[in-house]
Image 1 (spheres, rainbow, N blue to C red):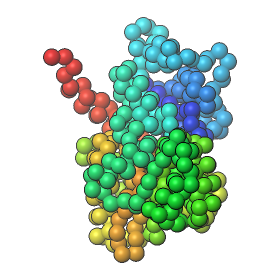
Image 2 (image 1 turned 60 degrees about the vertical axis):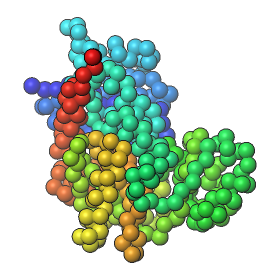
Image 3 (image 1 turned 135 degrees about the vertical axis):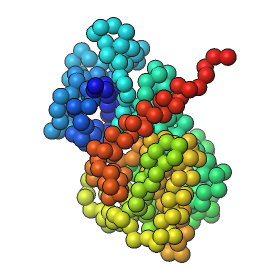
Image 4 (image 1 turned 30 degrees about the vertical axis):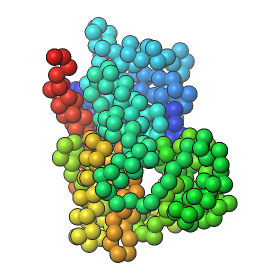
Length: 361
């Protein structure tokens, strides 16, 4: 018997286009004999559109931008028109929803919270892990409390930065030095990130980052290799082999990730057995520290003296077949279609686990 699967993609985020690429890849890998697939597109302005059931693959990303004529749904109608209860003959509820959203208003726990309220099973991380993983400041604070070693960092809200920019710039130079990296706290895909080598570049980097978020984090520059590992599971997660990123640009920015095709990916990375075991252990520790479920890509710096420093985790990493997370699992023996199926099953398992909780006394 087929299951009804909803794919939510797009989103009101600077990573909207990345989400469309993810949706196209997942749709073209889905087993249509096992799932009735329904696309749910969120426009860049935040309107929700449920398309007709998909029967086959899609050729172009533009095909995923569903016809807007008369189909935009206001938030008050989401339950009735996007996520029907299945209580009438013409309605069919979802067996599970796969949020293919990157960035704020989707990867950050907001859509996950909606699905929790509607009691609909979904793939990937829950509300807490999604929100903590999206906000780099909260994530790093949690990891500091958990004793996970990471680069030094400071952070500012726009309000406090604008009160005394010179003091903030001096503070960064004093605490972190140069070079350093300036990032919006709540974005992924390297959107809005800059490398600053002096105070002038630092000021420009703050200006760019604040264009994307009200909160900005600044991290010390680390002389080390960029190592990534994929984590998959719920209570007993497994890890893939590790990969290494070799950006030919100054650092692994948005352009290097999605436009240049000019970055080297080494899979598996050349690490010792001890280094791998250390990376694996910290990846699982970081997964559990935010109560993650489903999937996480954990990013590290590996220094010349074999120190492992946590950079960050991504609770909805790039998810096309040529993205690091699926490639790591491909090289670990799990194909892209099988990875999608495994994630769906993990989402259903977590939903069943939650049904054991008593809600009345």
